[in-house]
Each structure stands twice: as C-alpha cells, then as structure tokens.
Image 1 (spheres, rainbow, N blue to C red):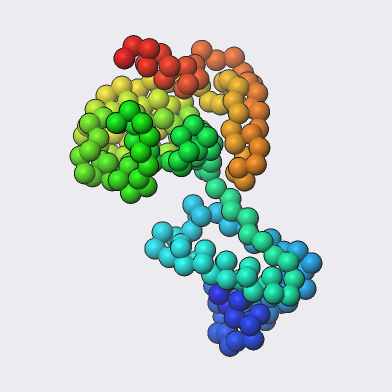
Image 2: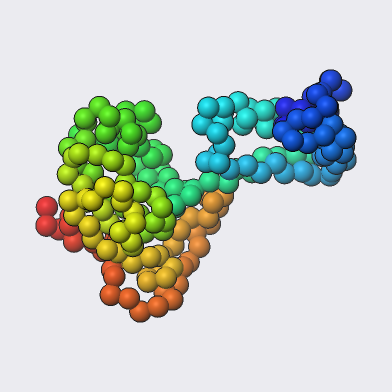
Length: 212
C-alpha cells in the first residue's frame, strides 16, 4: 500500500485496487498525507511478514522521503514486544552492543546471526538453555533436547517439559519494575499490585549466579 501511495504522490499509475483498498480511497489518503503539515508513519517491524518485511520498510522510507519534498513527515517504529526494547537498551548501555551477544570469551562479542537462539540451537553451539518469560505465557521455549531451565510466571511458557521450571513473579503485578518505553525514550515505573510469594526473575537469576 505504501508503494501505491508513493506512486500516486509521484503521479505514477496505480492499480484499481491495492491491499484491499480502492483507487479512490488510496487517492484520498495520498491527498491527506500531501496536505498534512506534519504526518507520521507508524509501523511495528515485529508485525511485518518475514518474507518481505525489509521491502515494506524500504517502501515506507521512500514514502516518507517523497512527502518531505513538499511537507514534513517522519517515521515512528514501534517495537519491543515481551520487553525486547528494554533488553536491547540494557545490553546497549552495558556493552555498547545490541542483543545477540556472547560472553563466552570473558568479554562481549556481537554477532546477530551466530548468536541468535535459533542459530545456536540448530548448530549445536549451545549445551543448555535458560528461557525467561514473565510477561507473555504464549512466548514458548523452543523445542530442544539440550538441558533446559524455564523461569516464568506460568507453566504455559514451555511446550515441551523443561528439566527445571522455576515460577517467577510478573513485573508490574507481583513486583515493581522499570521497562523502557517502546520508543526507547524513557523508562516507565511499574508498581506492585498484589502480594505474591513468587520472586522477581532478577532475584532468581542472582541466586543461581551466587551458586555457580
């Protein structure tokens, strides 16, 4: 659809129907974007199809570039489902790198391909897995035969039975927390809403570390 809008703004031909929208609807939207004093195109990379997600983002950027010829427009990326934005920010300020880091050599090494969960499990590079999931029970641990530890608020966080399951509290429900907002601008304080005997995942990880 963004490609069609870009084409219309550049006075190029467009099909009668694109992404379920009729040409007249696309023309109206293109006109609104063109006449806006400051438009913002918002998208969530995690919601884009894996096969052509990069092409869609490129199309969005081209649309923003076209709009800035005659008006003002910018892009706003939404991300960080399951606290992904928080994790990325924490690793950035602690190591200078984004996610997918190895500390095997005693210092951080960044490789977005080699150190992805899928790559390490497929290559046999990992000899165990610790799966942390206290925000979304549907975020299940990958199926694997290596020793596994799940730290989660629900036993729904794993498909196959792990070797060890440690129940943990939910941030903003069972204990306080401070996630980074999806735009990476500020952190948001989360308050404890109920009394619970489940400890925060951080407390569990510190206890495990102390025993190693």
